[in-house]
Length: 300
Image: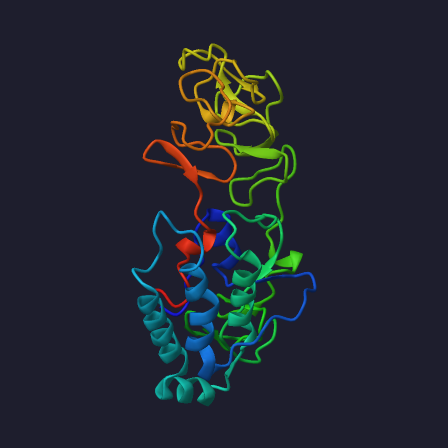
């Protein structure tokens, strides 16, 4: 498999699983990684960084040599003579900017233990290693992961090149009171499962028997100590309030039925720690650098 993801945190998966790679808004030109230089660049920009940052909880590779070996295998996948001849025979060209975006991201990330997640609503175009010239509406084929005859930035979907950032490609969302089983609802509404129509999400202190609430609210039992009690929409509670889950607390920490501050380094934890910390073996420790857990694009 040619394409992998940088996956320390789930938002990072979103960011790089389609290689990254680039939103619809203009951005600075990425670096370029030429075919004959893939192994060297990935070794220097990703592997070396992985083994120079704090990685006390482990890395995706047993050693930098293993990481370098995988980078070499990845270059062979992209640039083996049979594959190159096949792709070029189909009129495809290698785009060195796609891996360039990955190494640029790794450089910007450095040894940080966290990063600013991309806006979930931001349009992200695919960035394929080998691409063709087929335009929107023209027929296309996917030759393999990261290989298509659509022009760069387009997606081959159902045998046709489409623009993922064109609003016309999104199905029209149903409005309040309209049928929604097949198309879903506009933002702020939800598709009521019995009638299949869009309804307003329950507001503060309104019942939520289906577990759905307006944004920023959580469906909680009125009696926090009795999960069987009536469910109503409530906002996160302050320190000392009764709770039955982390999401019910402003602090995000409900270790034993009461909202508490997030534990600090060296303190016991139940899956939640303060900023920059991870809960490991029920103890808060400094979080490893994100790059420590990189499933680089040259990994299965």
